[in-house]
Length: 424
Image (spheres, rainbow, N blue to C red):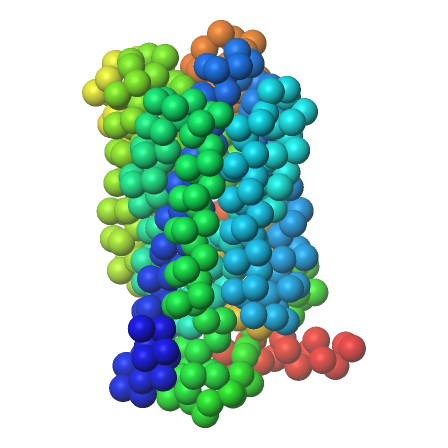
């Protein structure tokens, strides 16, 4: 199949590449992003550890993931992205297997360190880089489809791994998690993932090109991008927005289970993921017609309302409605970071620009779970935790509003590149 897909001259193989990206994100989110909430509850239940201590390990996970993004971006800018993804998937699978040996807190940090390295090398950064290279005009739609894997992981993979850990425990369940990760990522990467369309006779979006031609990749240089007001406003806005989102999502299973029961907690992850899928597909159609920055401001504000509501509501129906609203924002917030940076700065240095932005914004991603876990232990409940997350989201919305438009005309990009070349 793989050979026929990329050697046929009549059909653009970009959507096969998107399907591979979708699958990769399904497993990296189901076992990684959403899975961390399941691991938190499992370690808390089986080993009797405090929420804040496990949340600190989760914070460490995201910190390592953010720091590793810079060398990963440099590697995939010069080498075949499949090498990094397969290597990362192998490391992540070994880390998941090693969770069965965790008996002390320091061991969890070691396991999470390697897990974060593997997750970062085979997840969002490499995947969005591939999609931005294969699509330009239809980038929003392609990213919407690919990033729907983030939500599908929460619907399909996370409830399954929760069932595994609930019935078999961490010691007997972790080898199955490792097998699921490896089998869900490595084969699809080998079969359907390719770094650029040009070597196969295509340009982004399906126009024809000479085989082997990868020239004329436009965009803003890294040095110019990181100095811009747009980069700073978006990046620092995501510190607060992603910190609130990740902290809220990773504590969600425990919050719902405490206020209702285990079955409702499982249903909550499905509602969260389902709403994120529906909203992402809707947004993929309308985003090209909207001001991307204003759309992101609205998302952050909506996220703030949903998180504050989760802090205040105790009944089953009210919690599920608030979780649904939260899912609408999860469905698009992460995708918008990639879209904003690619739209404003182009493809040329996108991996390095996205990695630099991700490194800074990951400080919020890392601190969010720690903040919510600490407030939970101090207050004896999640009310203050989720109200604080709501406030952080509003701060993120305010920072996004200072970014300005994401759309830059080609002549301005060319002028910026000439100016950069002259300065050198």
